[in-house]
Length: 451
View (cartoon, rainbow, N blue to C red):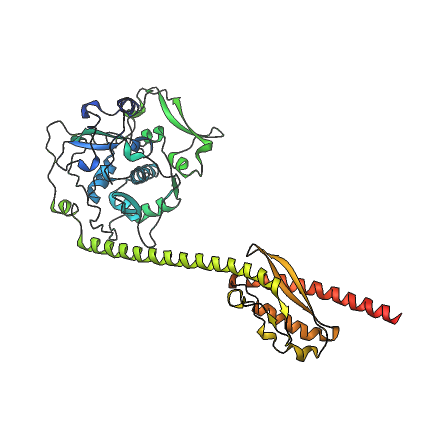
């Protein structure tokens, strides 16, 4: 919200005035200690300025005529725009100038539209398959809301409504633009970056130039001169520089470029009153409010569902962990009963380590001696050492034993379907390895007896 108290110090304001040539006749000054931007009245004689819009957005005072036209068309106060939104307006104008295209609000609207950003506003790509000429390349700006100063209201000579956060933002399809200009602008998508002062000066958006005997010149790393458009299209500015070089002409560059700013109106000039459309955007739109309420309810419902699912996953994880421990305990207590089934001492319900599928083991062994070996292996999905009962049969029962191991693999899940594949893989490897050992034992025994 616009409830931040300014922390800008007087020394910082003096530095801003000197660095960016903020006109002194606009009386740049610090607000009262308790001033908040939300307290700025529509009929106030001042404008609140965030100090970071100079270095981060490329905004200068006097303001760009194109920027003021955008503010008036979209009916938004300059103090409500975030630095990124202002940066898009400035970059778009510089891009148009670099292609000898006159920037217009309609042309800008083809690419960007007003968007809500919390209690502030910005500009974003229009919905649908709209063309693109800029992309964000710089990280978000932090703490920009905490540095505010004031200037006289006459710096912007028209009414600026304080747009309500729940006002209706229309996004109609713009008409009356030059399609050739759109095609040229979208031919190469430029990255949104901080624009050097020399580029702003050459574009007519800044009057901040200290050396009248030199011009700002853009050069590549190989020292060749490049245009502003080539500069904007560079993937990185590491290999580009803006230099001050003697021009050997009779006038400063400020006298040779078109001034594209709007001068403040004289002191005492009345600012026009708000139009009905401008008054309307200062009030919440019922449809927007209703839609926001529904979205908030869905968000709350989704949050509860996510919370419930998280709780379920936590309980499942605890159950799987407990099942792993139960498997270890079951392995310690496994016994062979008279009917050939395995008794896990009541642990079956939790660990799902039942072996009922092997059923009639007597039919498979027909009285042969059965060896039961407890095989302990590490299961990475559970993070535990798991013990499995391994049944060794005579050689003639290998096929039946393979079916038996399949039943064991099907019923050994340790409480988690997610780890089932890993359990089967570990058990299969262990079984094959042990079966090979049993073959070697019986072969050795046969050889000894034969000899």
